[in-house]
Length: 315
Image 1 (cartoon, rainbow, N blue to C red):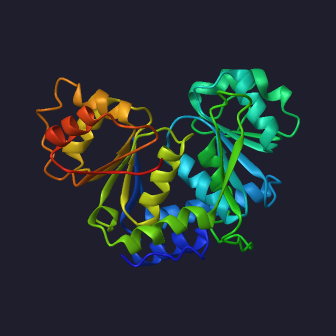
Image 2 (image 1 turned 60 degrees about the vertical axis):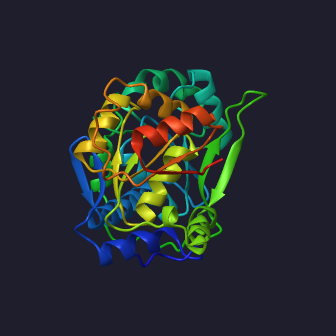
């Protein structure tokens, strides 16, 4: 597939795909289908809505919620206007979430429906936080994401972000102290694609016909990174709100998923599922794994159960 160079911006990615494959599905989430033309429009609207909310280039745009198609619209939309998305691990307790909001000085927060109560309790502790958007239905006087987004024009924002601008700020687990923000530039994410292209390896090749499962939490690179690479390559991304082994098996068979990324513990849960050896994996080409070492016995079991290639990535 004709992809976009690492020297270009996120805006180039979405514009290129909207022009070359406007009617192909970019994201599928709980019955909501977003085409690449829709994704271009929606991310432009998010960028303009962020600007209208007073978010400036270089600001952090916080997201505290589970996986959703809306998250990737926020991620790309923020990058289009010079912001850096800060996804917060939804397993964190309120004080930990408040610390990340204060440390990142995010002026805006998108919150998923499961975490409304937590945000209500800590919002007053975050003086830089000016705007809260509910990812799904409007609540507590906070506008709902779709209405907030659609109140803005879908024209590209009059900002030209650079490939060296931060687009993502992930936080470490904080096991030996306070969590630390790890900043990634647009060039960091897109540059990896150039490296993969140069390998010439079959497992590194993507096409618009690929169907990718985005199942790992977006608060980690395994979720956000895999989702980014799916969209960057113009594939179809099926977004799973929560990790559910049985549901993943259903999706592999029903939606003909051929690429996915899972951590070893998730792979173990899937191969241990009672139906794991009853599923048709004919379409599954490669499973990428990472974030922790994989025991050799588990790797062998995965090869036996799935019958496809495997590769290690993402640490």
